[in-house]
Each structure stands twice: as C-alpha cells, then as structure tokens.
Length: 291
Image 1 (cartoon, rainbow, N blue to C red):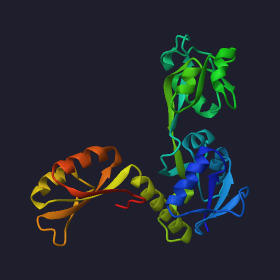
Image 2 (image 1 turned 90 degrees about the vertical axis):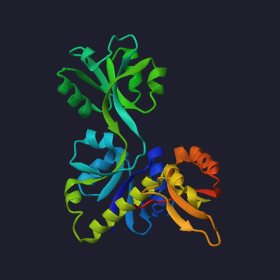
Image 3 (image 1 turned 180 degrees about the vertical axis):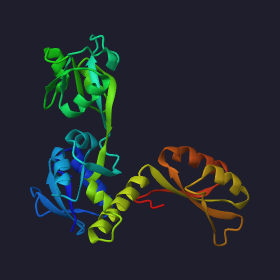
Image 4 (image 1 turned 120 degrees about the horizontal axis):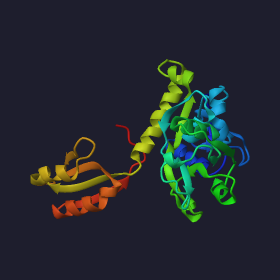
C-alpha cells in the first residue's frame, strides 16, 4: 500500500486525523504510542515530525505526506503540493518593534540582524530586496529577540498576530502564505496519470479529501414552496447549478426544492424562504461534496 507521512503531534496532527476520518480513512493503531498505522486499510501511515516530512517525501521514504507549506519551502526539496487541506493557515511575516521606525521592508537597514527559525526563506527574501542582513537562527520564541538586543527584526509564523502585539511587535510584510498541504515528490506527481495501483490510490485520496474540504461551510437545504413562486426561489436558492425541484406527492400547488447553500447565508436564506410561504424547511450538514 502507498505510504503517507503524517504529523506526529500538535494541532495539525489532530486536525489531519479528523479530516482523513471524514474522508473514510480512519487511523487504526495498535496503541497510542505506535509510530505506524493503517488508514482505512488503504494506506500505511507513519507518524513523524512535520518538519521532517518534506525530507521523507523527497527521499521516497513516503509516497505522500501532510505538512505545512512553510516547512516545504524552507526545506528546499523538490516537493509539490497536490492539495491545499485548508488547515493551519498562517503566514511567515517580517515583524519589528513598535519603536523601531521600520514600517516597510525598505526600512530594514543594511546589516540588520534577523532572528528566525526559517533561515533559508529569510535569506531568499532579503536577497530579493537587495538587503545584506545577518541571520540569527532561533528554534522558537523569536519575539523576544529584539527586546534582548540580539536582533533588529524577526521573521516568524503569524496566525492572528496577537502574540506579536502582546510582545510589542507589529507585522511589516508577508514573506510567505502557508497552510497544510498534501504533498509528494515531483517525480511522483508526474506519474499520477498512469495506471499503477499507487497512482490510482493517490488520485483517489486527493478526490476524497477534496470532497470533504468542499463540503465544509456548506449546508443542504430542503423546503416545500409554492410552484408559482419558483422564479423567486431560484433567486434565493441558486445552488451549485440551480435548485433541484421535485414534485410532492399530493402536494398540489407545492413542490420540494433542494439546494446547497453556504453556511454563512443560512439565516437569511431561511428567512427569505419563509417570506415566500415555504414549509417543512430542513437544513443539514454535508459530509462530502463531489461536483
């Protein structure tokens, strides 16, 4: 079976397991400390550090893997993204203290000291800016570096930005947008249009995960509405290609309409349907959505 490398701990590990379970690939382990598992009997999984997954995939120890795009980019390995899993969204940002006088990347002086856990990406970023900087590698808590006098600015991962603000820092520029990706070696990606069992398994996995991701934030709406108002219903329930209309047995002037609606629009949608005289309105979650 194809082998997939998954994060072994942290929020990303938990979210990844939940996503795979929603796609019908439950993690089956002998015990909680096991380093290997079966994914629905379709894939062999190995649990390793997220930072090591680009290496495992590039070297062929795993056919595919799940890790942050920031880690892939920092590794410099020839690894490509098969699917954005839309988990762990964050950005690698240049940040400076509030009183530094640095408001744009061009304000960073030549020879500035940059504290970061991403030396490769930081070096490439400042090289493009034409800035010769001194990198100060750190493994964590880069926010404290400017306050200790060991760095002038930092390049670090940012999600909400609250940690920066608490430590008297502000974002100056975004170096890289990141999220969890399903990745593979470039050679593997180029072989996925073949007829091998491995290629079919990987393509099927991408489709399954994509259907779960597509269903998130969507709701399935059903309601009985007056047939004469279908033109108004079509405006309220555009759906994926217009609402599905079904005759109701002995429904007379009423028909049943079904449609997929963004969850953020549900409140307004139900109100609009009720205003048209709709009855039997039902809203359900969608587990998977295949167009």
